[in-house]
Image 1: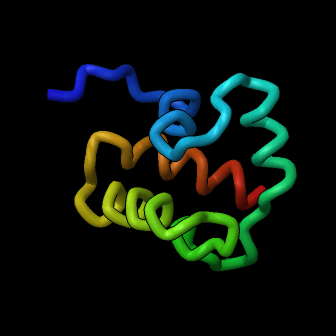
Image 2 (image 1 turned 90 degrees about the vertical axis):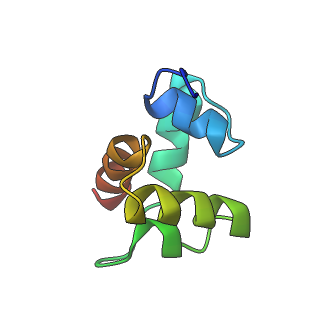
Amino acid sequence: MDTTPHNLATLFEQLGLASEHDRIEAFIADHPLADGQKIHEAPFWNEAQSAFLRNALVQDADWAVEVDELAVRLSK
């Protein structure tokens, strides 16, 4: 059973990305989503990251809230 607290930092860890606050903010600033683009379809994810994001949303998994939050932040 996964008991990891779910937040943006731990989501970034799950994605294999730097999880420090300033690195997360830099990633968000540097990787905007195109209008109407689904988060898992963005070109900056590798195949495993894209699959993780897609599955989190499709399966309404534990990470779905954080993936939605990231999608909103990348869309601004």
